[in-house]
Image 1 (cartoon, protein in one colour):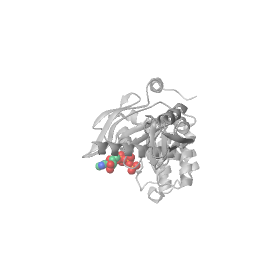
Image 2 (cartoon, rainbow, N blue to C red):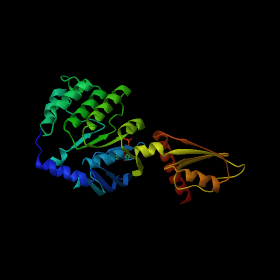
Image 3 (spheres, rainbow, N blue to C red):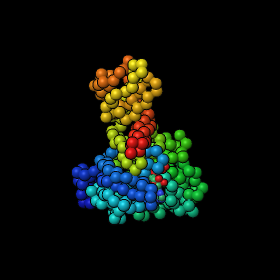
Image 4 (tube, rainbow, N blue to C red):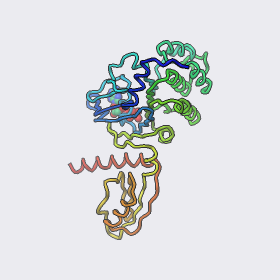
Amino acid sequence: MKRIESEEISHALKKQSCPAIDVENLRKSYKDVVAVNGLSLKVEPGETFGLLGPNGAGKSSTIRMLVGLTSPDSGKIKLFDEPAGFQTVSMKQRIGYVPEQHLMYRWMTVREIMEFVKAFYPRWDESLCDELIDLFDLPFNRKVQGLSKGMTSKLGLVIALSTRPEILILDEPTSGLDPLIRDEFLEGILRTQSDETRTVLFSSHHVDDVERLADRIGIMHRGQLILNEKVERLRSEAVQVNLVLRDGSLPRWRPTEVVYEHLQRREWTVTLFPFREELVDAIRSRNPVRSVECSEIGIEQLFKQVIRGNQLSENESIDHA
Ligand SMILES: Nc1ncnc2c1ncn2[C@@H]1O[C@H](COP(=O)(O)OP(=O)(O)OP(=O)(O)O)[C@@H](O)[C@H]1O
């Protein structure tokens, strides 16, 4: 049986009582560009958190602050209840990071890279490493510079997973990979997730990848987290309501649950999250409505509409200013 170190016991106890990742009011600007604008976020131990957001939303900046590659202007980051940024070696050994652009010694072979990294990680899992190399069909004796983009991404994941991190952070890990390699990549993450209580935070533009892996999804826009919800709720409680208004009339009232709306002549479409039947009754009774039809929308559609809704309300507030 594996010997349990006292340090591991204290980590395990701490893990039960506090969020694995705890971010409070984080801000980061690059000169006059505000990349992260007051972001707060908690990820519970064992939870997989998917960060979605359009280009430039601030996902990579957030991740780079989480792993200590850049420092915030203000705000707090705690990993396992310890302040991040001044990470000790033992803290770094508990965190796996897969960046979008892999930085590896290109002259080393796959085998040499493994041997090199292994020396820094006492929890390195040799048999998991072999299993993943097999699963991904990675050529042990080929130099990193001779690997394709997909192979390099898979190698980055093998390294991160073999260190048996308690927190795994991935920045757009499947970007630029073909659908088959993306599937293999996700399979690699899922395979090691099922038997561990690992906390995972990853960013992506692929809504279906996020939906497949994540327990909870956060939508980022202009440096802020504008939605943070469990995947099941996003799947089941996002509803589009198509209404036809009476001739010559306009909408008069809408509930705060409207995340997006569109009006074209008499056709008024509203997206509600979270959905409740009573909201439709209220919309019907307080507006000049002729007919109503509801349909569930998927997470991809909700994501697009939440972003569009946010852009519209920002433009309106600029217009009214
Ligand atoms: N090193 C930097 N110097 C200057 N501006 C930066 C730097 N890094 C990021 N930015 C700016 O900060 C904003 C947020 O960028 P960030 O890369 O965090 O977003 P993202 O959501 O990861 O985008 P993408 O999905 O396109 O990768 C953008 O406007 C970007 O141009």
